[in-house]
Image (cartoon, rainbow, N blue to C red; front, side):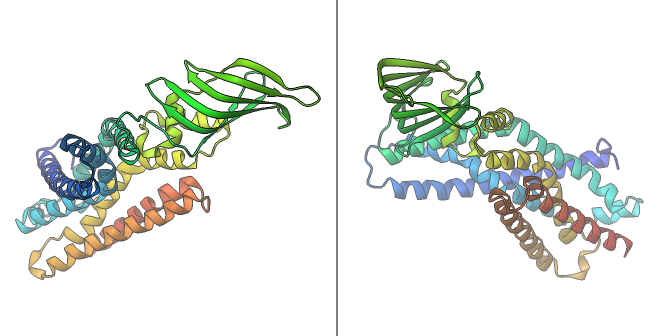
Length: 369
């Protein structure tokens, strides 16, 4: 069945409408519980306003939505399948000579398209919202309404210099006070050659990162076999920006899908681990296929030609349990990938491929039966 046929458009309309309905219902419930939890956290904070609470909850919603998105799609698919089965529409469609695969084609097309739209359009917006939430959460914890970033845990940066040397920068603490300026305190810079041998060490009381340049102030330069050199300031050109350093403090989920490739390339050149960012990037690419896999799981349990057999509630509960098992197993394998026990590609794609193959096998068996 073609997606642009009359019946295909009807089925697409059904699953999209059910998806939107379930999505808003779930988001409403999550919003209510998040507001209650945050109000409990700020009960002794008279400086926190209602506007701050509501904005913080709204900014956090994309993170929660990212976790439940496959479940929302699976429930929407189960509602759609149950409806067409209950009204005998599925029986009529089958009697017209349409196979279960022909029936699923327009639905899978719509679900895959929703997944692509989610990654390409909604993800950049949700990433920005999540970044705002991270900043607001930092402001809440530090009780500083003007705080933009960062932490007192320090910062390590490794960057390849144009002359083939390597710069390793370590700062005891960092602070951002506007959009494009970063202040670093108690800074040490090691200049290494291509054999990882120390050329010299530069210490500074404070440094300012702005306009792709690090300016160190109150500087001490140490070099083997030479006396210490004291300078007022030293400047280093750099490709590092405030946004890049911010990404070092925030979750990869707060980085847009379109920005992740450049971020991964930057961290690779800087010598940092990019496993988390690679996992996030591949999981976003794979997310439309995961949605399709969840629809097939729903079809196994909820797409029935005859409701008179009974056990409908058992099948629905079974479908939800199967969905949770798929999610749980995928998270376990994802964790193995983050820890380097299995390759990144396998950690992202193996749960999806297994779910697709098992669901297709069961549907083939039911179709032949």
